Length: 226
Image 1 (cartoon, rainbow, N blue to C red):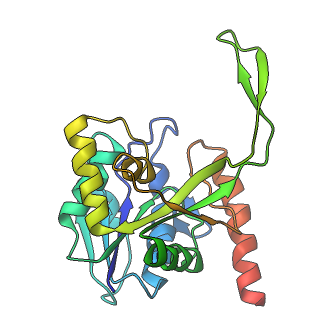
Image 2: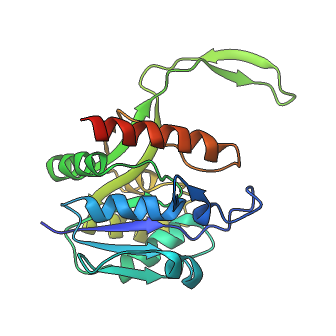
């Protein structure tokens, strides 16, 4: 069954002060690392990169599978909708934040396999830190149980019909969703959590880049030794 990857890379990176998606990371740009992982994932049959022409022109890829470009929207969910509209006909769609460059092909495959079994799946990791509820002026009020709490990551994989129906609902109701799992929840579709064995952080602040590079080099070294 076919699966299109929709890599969302339309953000302006205002918090970084520079284009984080084109920032160098262990010899490639952040966005190139994300693209390469999906190019290497056997279950991915085509890719849509939701980004501008400048970023897309910087990317390198062969003709091993179709790679298309489409402009994004003002909000993430509008970029996902644009990507869905531009995507070749596919049974499944894997949505990935381009600013998560540490994704590995095996993680992508695990999410796609889980989505084939359950209809919807997302990469995620359980919350392990202590959580506190704070007062408006920044003082602790109480602890929050970590039980059954997860950090959402990407890719988030769905049957394409489910994803398009979910975003039709989001658009018609003007729901403020921040990820695709939330869109699926809006139509009553639960998403299977796939525990991530490796870090997959989103590049948000300048300090994230040296940390990501250190993690990435460690992952690559481990793969080379395997």
